[in-house]
Image (cartoon, rainbow over all chains, first blue to last red):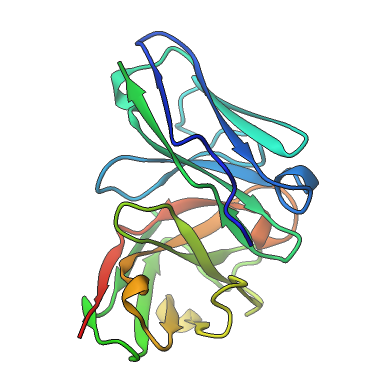
Length: 110
Length: 126
């Protein structure tokens, strides 16, 4: 099972919006609405930000939103803040009854 | 409050078997649609999903590591154990366990990993 493809880095200025893409295949991202997104600060455990493509767990800011089109899922961060600087990973259910992570995206707040 | 904590050796030799324990509180693996996954992250690299066990004792494994991995649970002790055989330096990583209980559907593998342990670092070296 190959890792989902994410851009290595995305940057934006405070207050701007950025979007991170996550590209898979019809056997994972495209085939199911079971994509989740995780935020990871250096030296810390990942944190669930989005599940089921577009749902936010309680306590996650509404500045984070998720969507999907075809084989590509996306995470959008609006009103970018310094605290959003972190690595982000997508994760999808697969037709092999496994889960697969993306390659990871480093978000930099300029 | 839900918490998970990984424990195990910090250093293992090549060809040895790694055994890691995830001790958790605040939920029970005897509850339907509750499960625990293991995930690892080599230094400076991406996360990699390894395995999952659910309340029915069904087990799912990474396709690439399936022959080397075993996951099991002790519901009475609130523990999940992961073993990885034939360790190699490329298995050097931080290993995390996480609860999977956030999502729709009736299959744990559909869910998000909503609570994570702090991780335990394992180095493979002779």
